[in-house]
Length: 306
Image 1 (cartoon, rainbow, N blue to C red):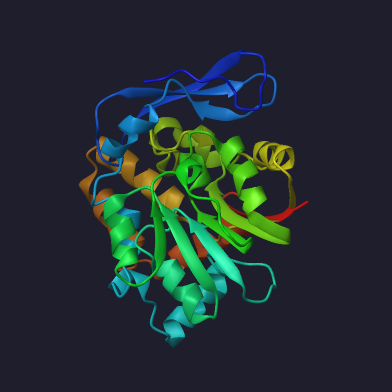
Image 2 (image 1 turned 90 degrees about the vertical axis):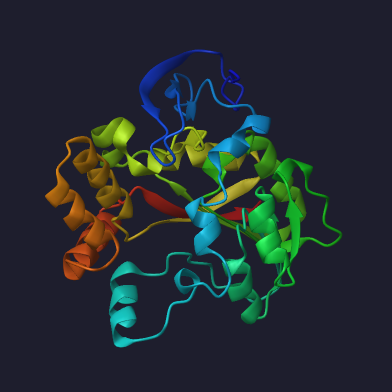
């Protein structure tokens, strides 16, 4: 474990926000979230050192499995039902209206998004921390750097677009990474990424049971204001923030509470709702409501290189 001060260089003066445990894989330990009293940025502190983080990302970590190219979860078959779902939910990975070019995905997992963008004409490559997931993507012909962003080689040609879907919260040194990505990006290029939104009511209500908290792999817990501060200090300008129309954080947090109270009936209903086997319309309406009220706890940021 290591203790780290605020990455924005603030004086070491923090307040304890809450404590929690690893609910995703049930690894031992209690972890604290603190907030910098100067800038408001929240972070997990103390936290596992970089060389220790691998144990919290087993090979069955869900993002590795759901992004395997050709798997059922990586393919969405077009139907009237999916059209209705997409109408309510919107695009889960929205991009600005830009033409095709060179793209790199940070945290590309097993490569499903690289495959999708390649089919749209993009020249793609990726960076992935997990050797197993990186190899899955590499087997499909994609150029992948295995390891942290900080150790990735400098590109020979600048990128038009950098993406990172639910990755920034996992980085040990987010400010340094943002500065590095800025150097890699051409003038007027974009960094488009998603992160959990810790300003949502769910964060305060569920506390250690909030699904998007995911201790200790989530090292930073951003709000719209704190992520803007990091971006501005690293040469980016926020163009747009889009809140996802997805109730997954809410439903899975309620599932944790049902499991803790041993409420089997509620647990069964929530599981069916999460899997789309029951209460589909309620699922869609909850997603739409949390999105339009900016309370889904999930946001995508369009940042343009200054």
